[in-house]
Image 1 (cartoon, rainbow, N blue to C red):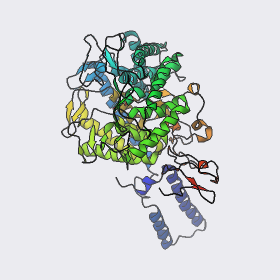
Image 2 (cartoon, rainbow, N blue to C red):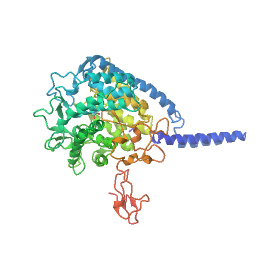
Image 3 (cartoon, rainbow, N blue to C red):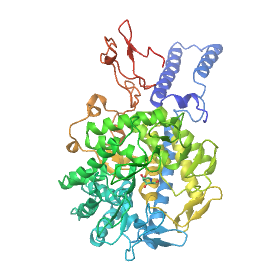
Image 4 (cartoon, rainbow, N blue to C red):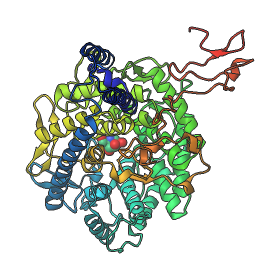
Length: 610
Ligand code: DMJ
């Protein structure tokens, strides 16, 4: 753990108040004494200074909050421009050397039609006649708008609508195609048609939605299984292939609801949402008595294949989508699932700031590993409101980043060493993503420094003439000839938003697991969940204090003096005065997540130390 200074521990808004108070005190002394035309005794001033120094040891440190806003504003501006340059270096190279193929090979300045390769580790059934779907362009759409380039956005939209077809003989991974292509199209459609009308020429006629619906229809045969759990693979032209594997992952069949649900809302056809929810419900019904799930399963039998799971690969976005679906669609059902699942994660996987894996049947730890995908978790915790837990994990994950220069795919926590083979870093976004969320929640400039360090590492180790290349081995920084589309959809986007969140001001977006923003719309809600009751709204701590702004207004974290941090397990006592007759009237303690009980004297509390 890095040392936290006293200032690090005090929320900025509180600190500013403390400091305003101190300065007004000093000022009033000076005014008072000028009026009296007397000099303050030297000893008196020194004594006061000492008192201040003892109470606020960092008050004269150049990094104090008084100086911070100006410093931070300048820093954010410079860093934003650096990130913009990074994005365009990646984008322009893609457009020059790879477009309209799927992804750029930055070392050889060539391309790969990788949509059919994603998740296909053994590269089986690769199509002969597939020439790409401009995957990186689709993934870049929302980033272009976030960076203010509506001209290029519009150009891309028109090109896609005139040139892309999904009627191709290509076997693709349903999850990957959903989060990258369907999510990219649906999000871009919503951005293109939102009330601020971000387009320049007005030539948008729902073309992206038409493409998205066509793709969504091609997904449907995958759900035609005895369990309703979808196959992991689908041929876009011919449907499920003969003898297709029946094995899939928890995230593979449990993270479809945002994109499919949005497609239903936009088209008025409930089928997409229905199949995604049915799969999610089935998956949830397969949880163990500990509310844990495994990593892989069979879609025909509904049996688990791999019982060990954590919050990383194969499971990650399942948790993310339960919570985000609750925000986007306002269904209590999603919240209930997420709440139980989240508590189980904290109980069985968490070890201090780290998360190991555990057997879903026994809750016993299996693998003690940090995987780079886990780094999204603190970002999710920010949305939940568990800021302290998010901060502690984020700091540890960042230390691993600092140790290697980037985040290795797998790091063995029990041996404090790299995994022997998974030493790569494919330009993943997760640490930047969590950094962005934590900065939004806290406005603590520490996160800007983390972002700066990430940007510097990316430029130092992964930037090549032809784009940004993945790292094959973090010990040698040997590169690999691949620029993943999520580098443009997520890594650059979250870094940009860390330094410039103006796109989010006065807006409520939820980001899909691929970083595509979906507006949170009242019309899409079954009914407004409690978090939408106006007194419970929290405010993004934007520079212009007091404005309800950005996606972060969905977070349950404290934003003003009256609000307290509440963790996801927090349940209030039935009565505000904490009086009770039975245990049932007592809630759950937010710090320990333990249920309070009713004492003999009739008060709820943590009376039993178990
Ligand atoms: C992205 O494609 C998505 O974030 C997905 O959920 C898992 N991670 C990759 C990038 O690392």
